[in-house]
Length: 574
Image (cartoon, rainbow, N blue to C red; front, side, top):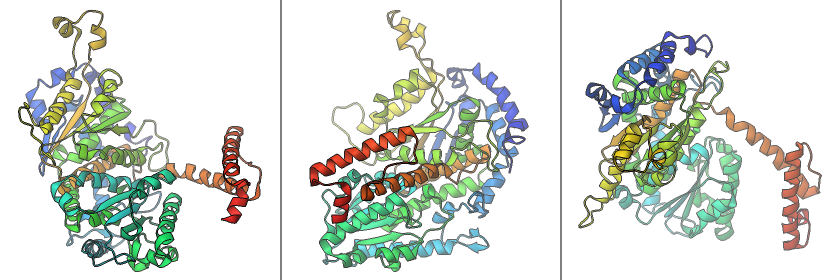
């Protein structure tokens, strides 16, 4: 592996790209877009998905230099090592094989000398059988009623990915038909308000809870799991857990101690990172319960299609590779720290939050894969909102403030077409008019001379001017079905991996999330001692001690007003 110093920054391609920035800075997108040959070279298609990156601040020469950088950073070798089951997640000594989760049954993907695909399909078959039994009323609740409502408990990657796919599927006609009379809800935040929202309108008799925790020790998830267990048993009794709660976990010992039959636990593996786990039981089980296994399998097939493309397609027409190189160019050479993800489909409203975690948790690193501090920034600040809502929110900054490259995602066929008599275009057409217009508005801008020619007063010209030359790319999908949702997911997963491979970082660990969690444990212990023994809060800095005491004293006043006693007395009584 190349380290940061004596590695990527010293490659010939990196140096040439650095020098090339000055050349690009002299060019404007309105001129670049006038070059038909250039634009044609920057429009690619695979399996129904069209990518147009002609509105990037780049020339054909730019991409040749980026391809050379990919070659010098051994991108093809790193991709092959990932698919080959090598332990490329070196800090955790693990392979990275989420591609195996959606591989065809006959595929061969080795991990430590063993083909893992049969194991994957064993779990898929088990989920198909279980979800069919629940959906067909063969698996009933403790009182004999069908289980029509599913609450999936998980956090981070165990929540954001499945929520994105669920939200995208729920208005697709075929999926909606199979989900009729069913509900899928997610409980992620340990905040009791989230539990209150989730439980509203639910009945214990018809609810199935899916607890998603690989180790069955995740603090927030297990507290929410115990909360749901209490909710169920308070009405149906302890024996109801066996019928109303299942697990996605590998820790069968703790699953059994919780009260769940280990036979009702669905496995996944250490080579599946949390944020890459939506294609495992983490996402497949709740989604299959809601939409039927056939729809979820179609989703997996869409992702697998992109996996194959990513592995074998030449870089010049490889969608994830092109997108990854574009991001490296914008971040490392043009100095753009953020990226806006702008899907022109309300069904993709949870896409940006999922990619936000996928990208920022993967590539928000400060050292190379060998531990060397990086002399350049990695990662992007990802955010987004569906169009046209985003246009009336943050597009002001994108058009006239900071330079933020944009990903526009459009759909040709709406999931829910609507045509109103007398209107010039359909509702979806109106949405897509904005999809096309916004990309050009960012690229071309509007000059003071153009404004004056329109009669705009001189006093307003500076306020109404648009510099343009703001980069974007457009992805156009034929429709939004389980298959294309899977394609979209895999494109971004692999794009993020490409960025990490080029930057020479480990995109598959997330040590940055650990420190805050460990410090929270220290606070938790102090809170417990204060409430049970009245012990003075200590061991923190002045600011934390002051604010923590204010919080605890405020809670004590609430207890006193409610119970007339100190918190420890309430705890002992309950």
